[in-house]
Image 1 (cartoon, rainbow, N blue to C red):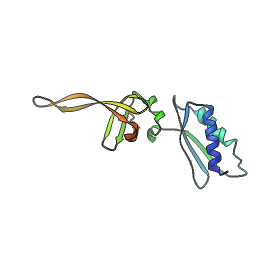
Image 2 (image 1 turned 30 degrees about the vertical axis):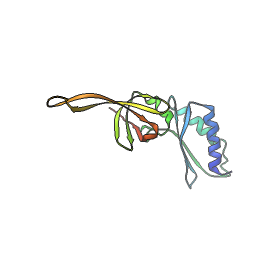
Image 3 (image 1 turned 90 degrees about the horizontal axis):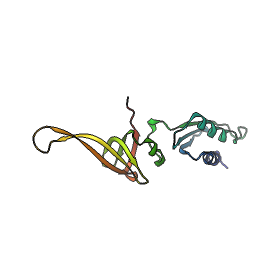
Image 4 (image 1 turned 90 degrees about the vertical axis):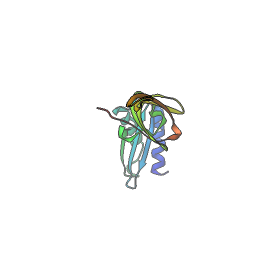
Length: 154
């Protein structure tokens, strides 16, 4: 069994122990540096990362293969890549890129197939000169989303 297969098997077991956690990515480079990114329905604690790390590290033999292991939580800069990441970010500002356009707004809802965004836009008045602020709302299907990131506001 290769190192990658062993790690994937151990990772699957570790995530089954805590079902609120899920895998974002697992990469193993040529130098056997293992990088694992996890997220959770209610966030990820340092203890969660430690538990997953121990579940993998304690079951691999360093005599057999030398490796380094890093388990971390998904950061805001990495974007939303898994559908399970969306519900915990309802109410936050997001930037969504689709084939047709880019939308920045507040995510107000999510379901099994899509997310709903709302934002304010300035549009010309229907009658007369000037502009008026309108509230827009759009539903975006997960299949249409190329990239989605939580926007950090200060």
